[in-house]
Length: 232
Image 1 (cartoon, helix red, strand yellow):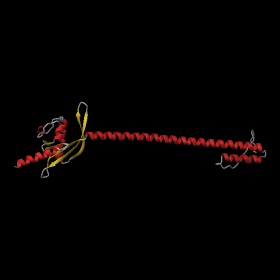
Image 2 (tube, rainbow, N blue to C red; image 1 turned 135 degrees about the vertical axis):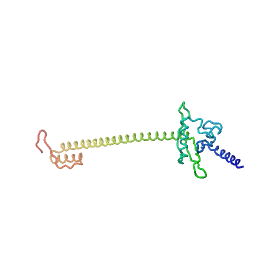
Image 3 (cartoon, helix red, strand yellow; image 1 turned 90 degrees about the vertical axis):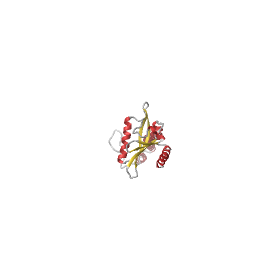
Image 4 (tube, one colour; image 1 turned 45 degrees about the vertical axis):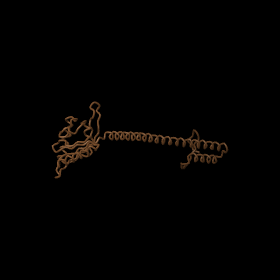
């Protein structure tokens, strides 16, 4: 009866783990496989668990990879330190170099006395998720690069517009000063033509100068006769 109950419990456990989509297995303390689920059988190309149970290596693994996997399992059992959600890449096609990405978790199993009695290893295929995540990151990087380029272009455009505005402002100021100078010269000539009185002419000239350069404080104005250094 006890043996039947043990078989029933193991069958129930097998049915439960077979419903889990992640590939998983357990090993005993000596490193032998003691439980595998259907997802692991599909991933390793096995038809039956009897091809794996009791063995230390999976037939599909190359010797180096098998040794690494066993050594890692033994380390987890020896130290009791779990490995949680570790991303790993495995080559699934040597010819093309195609890889699959798996999320690996390894947990030490404890017996009733609290001693490590084995290990539970879970492999979740996240290849599509990794591919989508990589594509999304590439799209973000490209968008950031485009934004950076656009920002640089806009900065240069703003600098160019600022320089152009300053150039136009200087040109407008120069044009306004030239117009003021032309008006001042016209008024000065008109003053000479209207009146030969020196004081009146000087007043007209000074008024014209103030209109041309109003920002300057005129302390004195000196008129010099042509071809002469004598001041009037």
